Structure formats: C-alpha cells, structure tokens
Amino acid sequence: MRIKSLTARVLLLTTVWSTVALVVIGLLISTLYRKSAERGFQDLLRAQLYNVINSVTIGDQGALSGSPQLGDLRFAQPKTGWYWVVEPLGTYTTAPLVSPSLGSALIPVPSVVEAPFDKNYERYYQVTDASGNRVQVAETEVVLDTDGRAARFRVTGNVDVVEDDVRTFSHSLYLALAGFGVGSLIVNALAILYGLKPLDKARAALERVRAGESEQLKGDFPREILPLANEVNALIDSNRRIVERARMQVGNLAHSLKTPIAVLLNEARVLEKSHGELVRSQAESMQGQVQSYLNRARIAAQRESVLARTDAEPALERLVRVMRRLNVDTEFDLVVSPPHLAVAMEQQDLEETVGNLLENAARFAKSRVRLSAVEAGEDVKGAEASARRHWVELAVEDDGPGLEPDQIREALKRGRRLDESKPGTGLGLSIVTEISNEYQGRLELSRGEWGGLKAKLILPGVTKDVA
Image 1 (cartoon, rainbow, N blue to C red):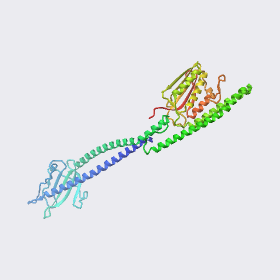
Image 2 (image 1 turned 120 degrees about the horizontal axis):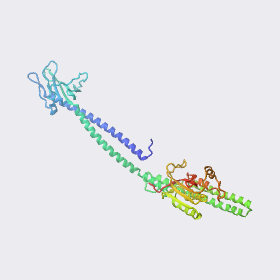
Image 3 (image 1 turned 180 degrees about the vertical axis):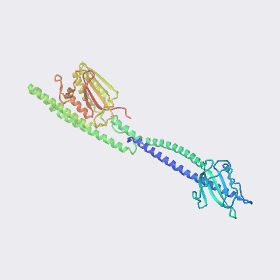
Image 4 (image 1 turned 30 degrees about the vertical axis):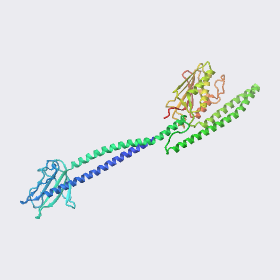
C-alpha cells in the first residue's frame, strides 16, 4: 500500500531504520560481551590452574602433598561445578588430590584426539559433571621433581556463571537500547513534525486562497519553501490578469452586439405583423444565443480560477426577494444549511442559473416554490476531471403540474417550450445546463414531493472552515 503522507513516510523510514540499527547494535554488543566474558572466564581458570600447580609438591614419602587455597569458597562447597584435581601420571602411583567440592565424584575426561593440547601444553574443554553442571575444564601436565615424576592438573569452573553474567548484561543492554530507541523516535517525530510545519502553513494559506479568503499565499515561509510560495503567487496573479482580460473582452463584445440587436427588435415593431413577428422572434433567438455563448466564453475564461467564490445565503436571499415582488401570489421558501455555505462559482453565474430555475418554477407553480441549498452527500460525483473536495446541492421545487420523464428530456433541449401559452424563449434550462457543466456540475430534473417539477443543481462548493 502506497503511503501518501510525507510525514508518515519519513516517520516510517526513521522508525524502521532505528529499529534495525538498534537490534543490530544490541546483538553485536551482546556477542562481543559474551566473547569477552568467555575469554575472561578462561583466563581465570588458567590462573587458578597455575595456583594449584604452585601449591602441590611430592613429599618425602613420594606422595602428592599440598592444600591449594584459591580464595573462592565455591571450591569448598559440594556440587558447585568449581573443582580442582591433581592425579599422578605414568608408573608413579599415589593417591590423587581433589578439592572438597568434588569429593569422590569423577570428572569425565575426553581423549587427546577430541581435545588436543595447544602449544603451551594446555587444553580447554567442556563436560558435564555428576551433578549435571556444565563445566569448563583447564588441564595441563607438569613434571614435579628431578626423578621425572609428573602429575595431571585440572581446574573446572561452572559455565552457568558466564551464561548468567551474559544474560544479565544483555537484559540491561536491551532495556537501555529500547529506552534509547523510544526516546530517539519521539525526538525524531517531533523534529520531523517541526521541520514539516511550514508545509502545513503553506497548505493552509493555499486553502485560504482557494476559499476566496485571501488573494495570495501569505506567511513567513522558510528559505526552502519561499520560492514555491512566490511561484504560486505569480501563477495566481497571472490567472487573475487572464480572467480580467477575458471579462473585459467579453464585455466589449456584448456591448458591441447589444445595439444592433436592439435596432433589429425596434424595426420589427414597425414592420407589418407577419414579417415583424418573424424578425422579432429571430432577433430574440439571436439575442439569447449570443448571450449564451458570451456566458460560456466568460465562464471558460475564469472557471479554473481558485478565487471564484460566492456566499450562497445572501445571493439566494436577494433572488428570492426579487421573485416575491414579481410574484405576489406565490409563496417562496428559502432553506440554506449550513449558513456559511459557499459555492465555487462567480456570483453572476450563480444568480443566472438559480434565477432561471426560479422564473421557470414561478411560471408553473400554483402557490408555492421552495429553494434549498445544502451540502451534497458523499455519493455525489462531479465531472470526471473535477478536483473539488466539496459539493453543494441547490434545489428549486414547485407545486405545479410537473413533467413526465419524456417531457423532461424534451425540456432540456435548447429553445424547446412545452407550454406555448407561457411567455419565454425556451433557453432557460439549456443555459442553466451549460453554465453548470462549465463549472463541472450538473442539472437534474425530477418530480418533487409536492407533485411539481424539482430542478436540482450539483455545483462545486467551498467552506469557510480552513485548516
């Protein structure tokens, strides 16, 4: 699974690296300590071996004599695994000397082939004594007098001493490394979060620009992020200039076409009825077509602007106020939830789309029209290319006769009027569709709960809640 969060990636990488490094370091130190402990244990046995050698002689009667004092009480306590033994060699026979800890027990002795002597004529091996202790044996053979009488010297130590020492050290080491690792991860996490904090500030500043609350990325950015912020601000300025230039050109074009069309409409009034009606209808159609394409050009010039924003409640309240004055016999209801709801489109385009729907509803309503604006549900999908994260649902519903499914398809066609007795050009719904499509939204028609037509607009939205 791909991790999209930069913070999570860095934290995961440092956590994995720290864990692996600490485990390797712990194993390495533990291994080195074990080798050192084993080497020290062997050196101790060697020193005790030569202490025994220096303490034993051959007496006047030819017997081995001596009482080695190694300064360790374990050589006096039975079954401890700490023993010393002196045995005669060759034809020389006498009773062996043993430590009080060994008593009458015997220590197994491997052959010279299994445990050969080294260059110092010493050998070291491990065996298990009669008490079940694993013991390390240091052994050598020494000639004791001028007559060539020799003896074998052996000193043993309990291997569990080394194992307990290594186990205690490793436990303390792993606890220390674990504490150090946890502390390091916490410090690393804090350092990473602190280091990436400017990116959160840049994101929040960009959110404010997108929400229309600021015109530029503002903030005290570090040296690494400042060039990016400057480039984004330059892009916003360039986008703003393009929008203003497009608006000016569209306005000039609209102004240049307004007068010729008005002249045609005036001339149509003085012509005889048959010809005048034809000229008038065609001029009105041309006026609607021109206005539609001018709107499309204007929207196309600024629809990608991150500054497009209109607060829904005040804009819709103005429209409803106007409709109430024009239709005194019709009741208009307005519902906006939540109150801070905002639409990511120009105010002029929002008023034109909703105004067309309200005019259409007022034309066919019996007594009531309802306009609602709410946050759209999670299942609402915009256009495929949309990058918006928030959608607004505007619905206009009346209590008129409504439309059947085939009539809905016919009503969405440009210039089609299902009721010729009502005034209008038949361009309203098609204009609404075109404007909503340009903003990557859509228009849906269905039968409402009052039995009349319900026109629902899905439009991109923004909120004032910026992180």
